[in-house]
Each structure stands twice: as C-alpha cells, then as structure tokens.
Length: 311
Ligand SMILES: Nc1ncnc2c1ncn2[C@@H]1O[C@H](COP(=O)(O)OP(=O)(O)OP(=O)(O)O)[C@@H](O)[C@H]1O
Ligand SMILES: [Mg+2]
Image (spheres, helix red, strand yellow):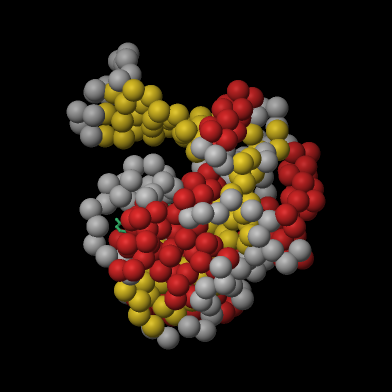
C-alpha cells in the first residue's frame, strides 16, 4: 500500500454553462463533482499503474463525506482524520461558447492544533503499514509550513521513503527533512535557490544537481511539454516525451510523481524512473481527468521517451 497525503482536500466542482456573464442568473448544462486535490490525483494515477493507494488528510461535514465516498467509488481506499468542520468546495465555471474557465477556490476553515496533532499521531502509528508516502499540494489555513518536514522525519525513522510535491515554504521546509524524492516544476524550484536559474537545460541541470546533493535527495524537475530532468546529486538525466496532442495537462505533475514512485518501488534505476514519470505525465495530457490516463498510452509513450545523460 502507498499512502497519498492530501492535506488540503476539496470537492472539485465543474459547472458547464453555455455563456457565463457577470451579474446574471445561470442555469447549468452539466455539473461534475469529484474528490479533488493533488493527493487524490496521485492516488488515481497509482491505481492505474497497478498500485494500492490510500488517501489521507483532514475532511469534515457533508463535503468530507462526499470526498471519501467518491474516492471509495473509484476503488481508492481512504483513511482521513475527521475535523467536524465542512470541507472546501472549489468551483470551476466552464463557459462553452467563449471557452473561458473561471475558478473560485474556497480558502477553507483553519485546522485546529488538536487535529494537527491527531493526524501526526495517527501517521506515526500507521506509517509502517506503507511501502511509500506521497506528500502533495498546499496546506490548509492553520497548518504550519513544517508539517511535511515533521511527517517526512517520522517516515525516515521508520525507514519508509517519502515523495514530496509542494511549493513555497512547505517545499522549502520539507526538503530540509531529506525526503527520498522531490518533484518541483520550474516555478516551484525558485524557493530552493538563492537566484532564479536560467531556463536552459544546462543551467537547470547544474541547479538541480546542487540541490539534490545539498539535501541528499533525488530531484525530478518537470518542465511541461519539454519533459523533465532528474538528479540524484551525482548524475543528471534529461527525458523528453514524444510530441502529443495534449487535451489537458491538469494533474500531469501528479501523474509524474506516481510514475516515478511506481518505478522506484520496483527498485528500477534512475533511467527507468524518469521514463515512467514522463510517460505518466504525458499520458495524463491525453485524457480530461486529473491523474487519469490509459495504461496503454503510458506503456507506448514510455517506450518512446528519449533519454540523455547530461552529467
Ligand atoms: N503539454 C504537454 N505535452 C506533453 N507532455 C506534457 C505536457 N504537459 C505536461 N507533460 C508531461 O507531464 C510532466 C509533468 O508536467 P508539468 O511539468 O506540467 O507538471 P506540474 O507543473 O507539476 O503540473 P500539475 O502540478 O498541474 O500536475 C512533464 O514533465 C511532461 O512529461
Ligand atoms: Mg505540480
């Protein structure tokens, strides 16, 4: 089993309208509501890759029950800490005629110190049940930015590898606890550097090797359609995906994390891990749902990924 932490859970609701206009009443054409959050996307992708994910974090109220039920309906196990406060709903309004997307993200209720402690204690008790842990996404209000660092430390002590995909202070604090792997994108990596790196592959390769070496971690830097770089602090590899007709890249980074984890959990080397990561991210662009892809697309793309050794 693999634990996918999804601390900032939400219902992701997409409302399809013919035309969206300010100050008007609208009647929806269609409404789709799903369990949202990056940890949920990672879990979906892991399931497609033949793994058994369990999603955890905080949920509460009717929305919390909905998030759990939706994941369970998808065949994904859950182990949430219940807060007694209503979970968030994030609403996206899709205007079909003008092809616009308007997004409203609820901030959510602050998590109490008591519930933070409860999650940490539960994590400590159950961590050894898992083969690996993923820690993805932003944090709800009230949660200190070192929460990922604290959980990574607990996993470390239990000998369980951790995979971190976050941003800003949560990423900066988290990497200091030496997770097995970190997966920022080009924007997110800035917080780990004193100066903004150049955009060339050479400059990025030098930057990720330095970070990976300094923090004793493996750093996979995703570069959207340009593919990805990976370094274990010594070597740096570049992986380029084949050209595809991308429909939606939402959740590609989360799929990539699942691809990397899947390969490393089978004790495959850096080369195979980055190929799997890039293939899962790219396969995800061919399907609408975040973290959803066709395993045949994944296999086909994986064989077409071009790998270069940079260092
Ligand atoms: N337009 C695209 N065409 C082909 N492959 C893509 C495209 N976008 C993303 N990918 C693949 O998915 C991987 C991860 O994507 P990206 O760098 O966009 O992650 P991200 O910014 O973390 O995304 P998110 O956090 O929204 O899931 C890339 O390394 C690449 O392999
Ligand atoms: Mg991402």
